[in-house]
Image (cartoon, rainbow, N blue to C red; front, top):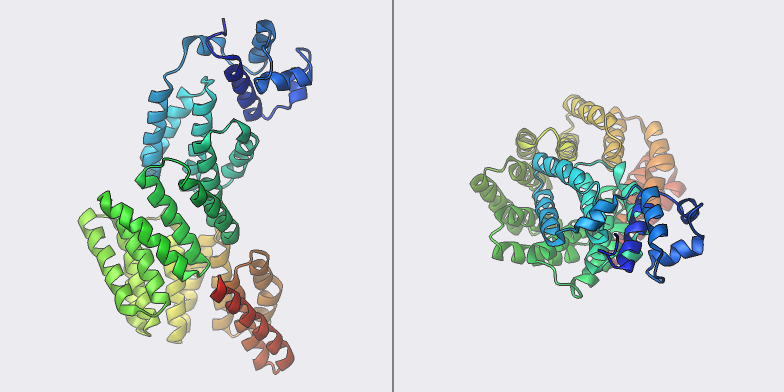
Length: 430
């Protein structure tokens, strides 16, 4: 009855379902066979008894009928790739619709390769939807399935693990995963769109680590591939990232050119999403040039185009408005924006960097130096030290030193200034 699949495939199927159900070898084998015999079945090291295999399938609720019918793996894999493409295009409604359909369709499927691919794409789907509670559970299951992975599965597992760490603001950990994924690019036949996406998310992560040279390198690689594919939406994303990098190294004209190209692309595509990001970065450029009122106009325009689901995008623009208002000494307006930002963050479980940012600025506007000193020393700086985020360690150590100097505590101020300098030195050599 179950000879449709080879012994090794039946074993892989049993193992995959066992791991997916969080069952131990001992629990699964109990009353059927020894643990060592089950292990051999799972790893294709023995020709298993049909009776025992049927008992194992029954225990794991794997329908024997599915094994008998066979599966059109090529068609299913194509459907999964279509879902993945929709996810990559950030089409949330369509991605959810396909997720529900595929989950139902694959609920009784026993093909290890297809199920593993579905689980991997499921991770990417939950990252798109910011369902962060689901992701560690899925990654843990996938980690225990790794000996069943083919090369493509291994690549996606590493890439999506990196993306998860990036979205959790653990940029150093993300960097290590991306390095491994980049190494696998040369060993696998990946599509140009897949390689472009890996280059792009690597560029974003390097930008978060303030590694401008590397960010420029990977953003250009991504842009070249997207241009060849006539993917104007993703090309616009790359132009924005390039503009951010140019702004950081004070190449302001090149930065503005990139942002204006992104605005033009957004207009042609009628993309509010891209317009929101482009106008925000034009605002950041004017802020860097000390044109703060003009910067605020661009940030407010950015908020108009940003969707309510884009919470991080909205918070980033609000934070930038606050920063420009600080430079203009507009205390009343700034406190209103800070409270708006903090209210939005209260409803979220993430955005820790922005949470600290708003609270620090609130203490600064209120001139509450005692609370600011305590907050920086006991909460903010230790967080960034734990996450090895050298840019924010330097930024907040400098600010703490400034507070301490105002209280004439020069020895303590000198200590935090030295920490800031050490962090900036580390940034310059990474």
